[in-house]
Amino acid sequence: MKRYRPYHHIRKSATILGLELVYFSIFMFGVVFSLLVIIFSFRFSLVIALFGINALTYLGLLLHKRLLQAIRRRYANDFLITGKYPWGYGI
Image 1 (spheres, rainbow, N blue to C red):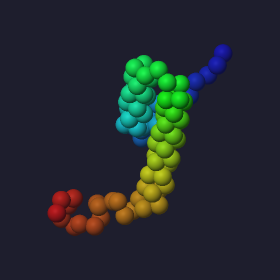
Image 2 (tube, one colour):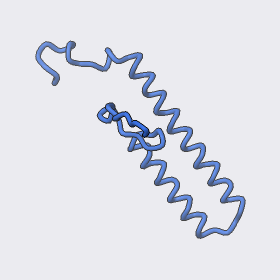
Image 3 (cartoon, rainbow, N blue to C red):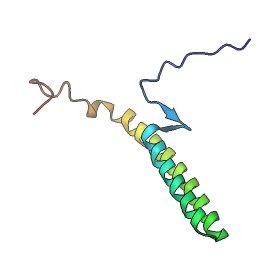
Image 4 (cartoon, rainbow, N blue to C red):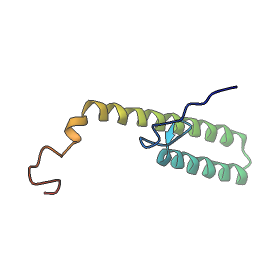
């Protein structure tokens, strides 16, 4: 019988297809929009172009996510404000 491990990092970020929920919703909005364009137009070249645009959007969102993660890892201490202000978080 197959054993399953529980996913403990759900609080970090929930992902669908490797994208965070915000990025996934942007991607799905683009897909639905392109499907509407395909339905109301009858050119095959437009179908191929929209497929390419959706693929580039997906790859761009994946790369954007990884770029943000790399920046957060490198400059994690610069983004923390807990130790910078002795009177608290606000200014």
